[in-house]
Length: 554
Image 1: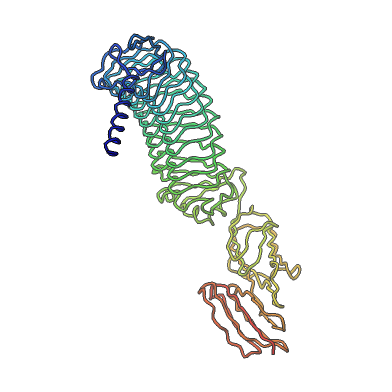
Image 2: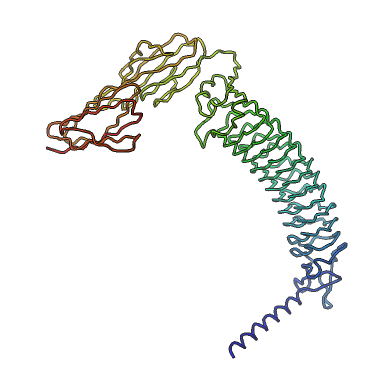
């Protein structure tokens, strides 16, 4: 009995809902409407007419239902979707839903009334025969995919008051050739003109600030674009596949060339990099036709495959010392192998030695120093065999066993200073400078200024020099007294031998000495007799050691 009552209740609810639906929607002169209030109605989805409704549609001001007059104040979501209407006329402002004409493949002409401000999402999506569209001058916004897939549309005049053109607004408008709009537009959103393969002429608003991702991708007829100084942001792949593009101009507000920005733009032969650019992203110019590129002084990073350009024959650097530490510097494959082999790398005056020393740039076969002053330079390679700081004419050029290349004007004097770093004296052992070799020939020892500083002075440099400063180490003499112990660090210098002697003071006894090698990543015991321990290290070990010494009170 309870089950029967429940079934009856559900049946009554279904009947009530169905009856209510019929009461809200009604047909008038061949179109379906939905009553909104006691006095208003909107055009509803054309149920049962989607595949048969055709011809020219004019929306009346008033309709009747059961003897009651209702004012038409809106057109509902997807109202004419997939119908076969050929034209549409509206002479007054009404509320517009989304997708009102989506999929109307027979629609050719549309006239929209003055006062209308927004063209909602998908309004004309898939209207593949639409060729004549009259937009009101009061329009301020064109939303998502409003004209997407309008494949017959050849030109459009966007009113001057429009400020935003939404994502995919003209996506796949294959026949679109000409676009005009006012200067108030600040954003062209993602995929805005994606694959508009016939697009040849477009007015670029003078207040444009942003071009979205893939905005003009595969616009294969577009040849020139001149963007205003107001533009600061470019989306990934914005111009990729624009095979006819020959000229693009950006203002100096652009700070990054994004991923795939100009990839496969085979006709783009030249490009002026904005002076504010700090980064060139992944595949930004891959497959591009550029023949020469100048990288501004402020550039900080160039990512992988950024310049895999088959015709790139000249790379000009303006930064005297571009960073090379990845990810904040230049990727090892930022330039393709053919570019590195065939292109000429131009570096600033006095910087050739620096760039020849860097892993990325030294791969260029042809490196030219842009000498604008006419001065002649000598190239110096400087290396110290021990841990120290080396100065050239009072500027630090070398530290921590790493070779450094620098340039000095020919005929100028050279003062080489070696500073023994803080902490160079450990338990009575002092690092010192033995000699200096220039182009393989040993010179007199550096002049000892004090126990921490040594100098070598040359009156005039007239040739390239290879300078090696030998810094051998004296022996360590470590005394372990009561209450002492712990760890000491041992770093053998090049071509030297280091002796470490550990002695226990009266009242103490060595319990254990462990040697941790940074190369082998292991800790090994060292021999001792409780009173002394003798260890020897040489540069051939190519690593440093940590000696941990434990003691016990006798």
